[in-house]
Image 1 (tube, rainbow, N blue to C red):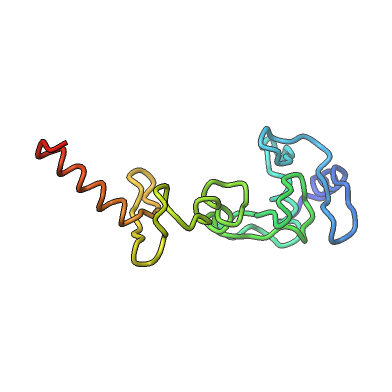
Image 2: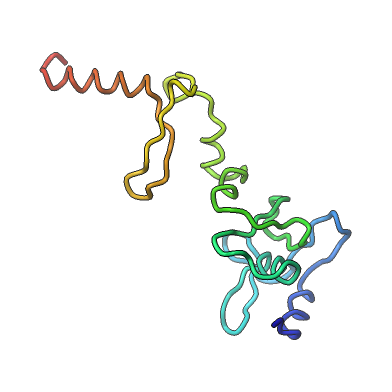
Length: 150
């Protein structure tokens, strides 16, 4: 059940514009630029509150994503629930997004289906791309070092 006092306090801190424009949060923000509101002595992200007021609770395992990429925006029309992976890959500021857009490895080999393998990260377990051509070169150099030829 929605607390009407919190709801009124929330919307009093929003600069509501036209439906297609960003509605900017006018109150306190976290260091990362996202608006926040204290609810029952707990800091809650303003964009998440906006999403929940309009759409209900965020489904488990999903995050609220800004379509507009404006962290201070709380316009419900600019927010959507997505998986963390979708959020990272579609967020043009993230390193995941930038690496996903690369077509070649650091040594210039193209990431093709034949030349790409996916390896789980040692700590997180998330899979990332590896260049097969570079792996072959790396193994040849390691073998040469081991045999004393280098």
